[in-house]
Image 1 (cartoon, rainbow, N blue to C red):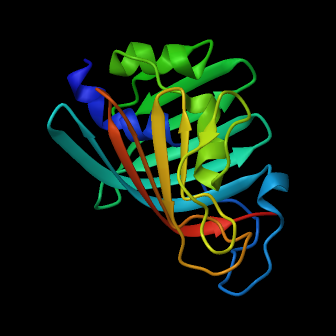
Image 2 (tube, rainbow, N blue to C red; image 1 turned 90 degrees about the horizontal axis):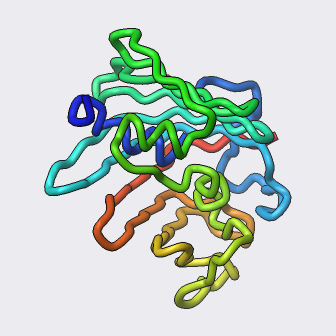
Length: 192
């Protein structure tokens, strides 16, 4: 079962479905990144683990303490839907098998064989530390945005396509020694 769900690593790593928040257009003013709580994004992902590479599409809606993710193959076929919130984490696979756990760390441990720091990923994808033992690694860019964050053994680095201090990342790369390498290419951000 673990090998059948290895492709879900990025789903567990990075959390969405459609939402009504406005699309962020180039040149539009962004709210200060520190104040962004809710967002959704559409992205392409790839994950490399133990010399195996998987890729696909990710739709992620983050609202308060809850997340909805939809993971699809590169051709758009839904592979898994993940819901996190209300003290539960639930994964529904494309074959309609359901995996349920009290938290997302336990869910990823059951499905993937190890847990992932999902509770920190919403901050990481926004280009900010999660407020725990994170440290800024390296310099900031000319707009003061972080180029890299290190937290709990994870190295997260960023690329931006838009100018301005509040522009959100276009690419996120996260890796951990002995762990997975995750790449996220964000194609669309929506923030309230």
